[in-house]
Length: 202
Image (cartoon, rainbow, N blue to C red):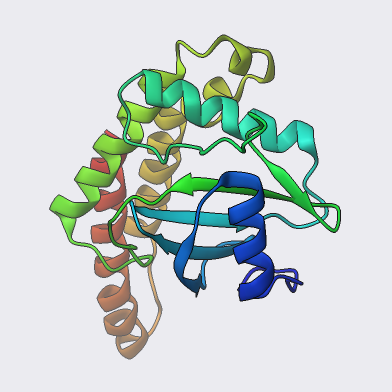
């Protein structure tokens, strides 16, 4: 589960869903992913996700996340839809911890460093679509998130640093033949990896 132990059990979750969201769960199961405590909810009409944030998450940061997700949905990006409570709020609370409910999107989880080139490019395309959509999100501009993390200049700087590292590796030399052979073996692989990263950046 999440980084902070939950006080929720199936009975508490059932009561929250019925009393706050008018959702009657048939099946409740934990999803072991992320920093929050997440549960998959199977109901009569569809599946949902119930997410319990840590007590460090404030209403302001949760509402900001909700606002961004709702904006991306308007931009036709496939993101989970938030379910409002009976009172029209995007979240509720349990023991001072914020809880949200979203419609479940079926898919799969990609583990780090397990995909091939084509699948990596597909991830890059999705990230590009997200970044492009967020260019129209005015509230993000105050923090310079796009400029700092996803700008063309940042990528160009990354490419330059990789190319400089590649040049240093190509200029390395070893005194003994055995060390030279070993160094060449690993250097060739590292250079291939650097070229691969440069292609992804481009």
